[in-house]
Amino acid sequence: MSEDCIFCQIVAGEIPSDTVYEDEDVFAFLDANPLAPGHTLVIPKAHHERLNDLPDDTARALYDALHALIPAVEGSVDAPASNVGFNNGAASGQEVPHVHGHVIPRFEGDGGHPIHAVGGEAPDLSDDERGTIASDITDRL
Ligand code: AMP
Ligand code: ZN
Image 1 (cartoon, rainbow, N blue to C red):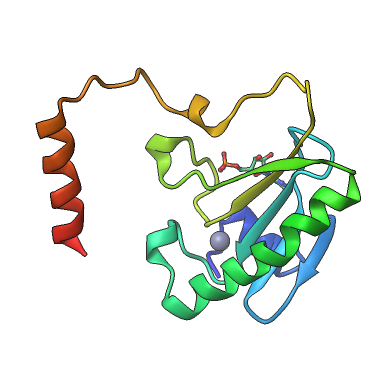
Image 2 (image 1 turned 180 degrees about the vertical axis):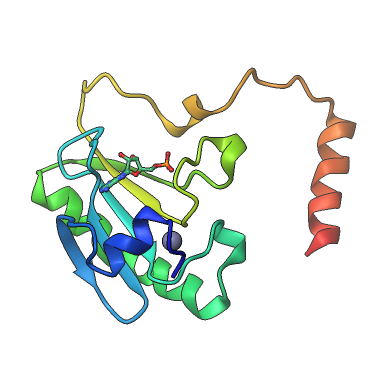
């Protein structure tokens, strides 16, 4: 636990939350400032800042919980769809430095946007530049 982390304090029961799911590794609760009814946050109980900091077992447990929670969250508010995403690092807009996946129910005509709206100005990349980036990603695995 990180003492000054608000999500660690929620997991520890020191701050109240609208809890929707809990297992050995994962905790899920309603977002306090929902973008839609049912907006849910899914977090590992252990404090890690970014997705890539998670140990393999924790990453799997987090995905398993998300997999189960998405249809439950959508169903609870009769939503036909959802955006599911992680702000991963401060530059992406992550405000709470404890990994959390957002499940945001979406409705036809709700005025929201697809996940493409999160990026900045779209880059104009040549085929060569795209190829170099693709190889570089592969080489780092
Ligand atoms: P992010 O910008 O991805 O770090 O999102 C942090 C999210 O945590 C925001 O959507 C906040 O509304 C939410 N949040 C912050 N404090 C609480 C809290 N005490 N209970 C529930 N959600 C919270
Ligand atoms: Zn934490």
